[in-house]
Image (cartoon, rainbow, N blue to C red; front, side):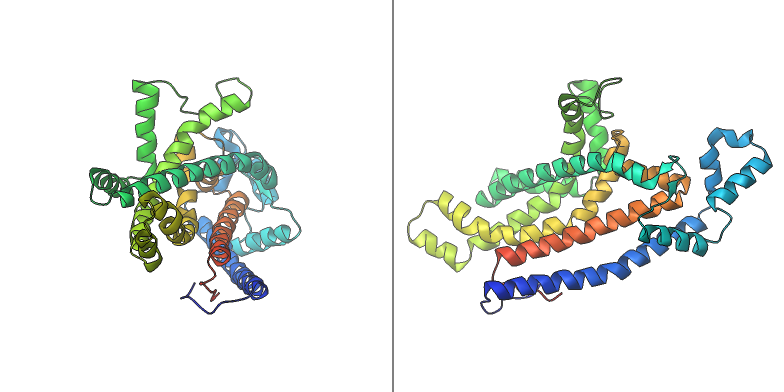
Length: 336
């Protein structure tokens, strides 16, 4: 994104967005190819043999002929380049391959788990946005006061805390000291996944994931709003005698929120990384937990598919953030 430009027509704006989307799509193709190749190479260089994960404890009782036959059927004796080519060929035809660790088609594993991850990430993002806007605006509005100092101190403290520390702290409070919320799984043991069950089990993972993303967002909203409060149009609004609440919320805040959209898009990689840790701690049956299982099992097809899915999600998130800024702010132009 670049500095303000001349006023553009709506048609020109649409063309500008279309060029940005086409450019980013063209760049995404080699990026995804490099990521897929990297994943296969890293998995190939790891000291783990996926056949042990495929058989589990049964590998010790299986005969050599059985193991050799399984290796041949799974293509584990082929070179990494042959496996990569076979996987890429299947991907082009819509076949993501067979997961060695889950013993299911990769598409089935993703279809079963992706909705729960989307639910968790969406809820966590909403928590992060609400907390960031309320705390950031309040801190900037009361600059120098005890609220501002408290929000800033908490923000800088949370910057250094990884999500799993927050998760363990939440478990200690809400499962041990004050057991009011479930801390593991999607539902209670043996219960059906009803709305009430899922909602109760979603609260802690979503709040922890959301809070883990708030420090940078809160501090950015505060800083951006403080800068907007010094702009000429805000000074003009104060000179007209408008109440301070109207000046802040209607004149300064909209200007401050434009860069917030970009920052929010750039936080997506950290949100995905945080989801991996949060899902693992809370035993949430999402796609991020499958990433850990696939990595530990050297499950080539599943690991590659999940990595590509994550990469595409990050690229699409960044693109949507940039498009949103282009739509909301006519002063900004795209440079690819």
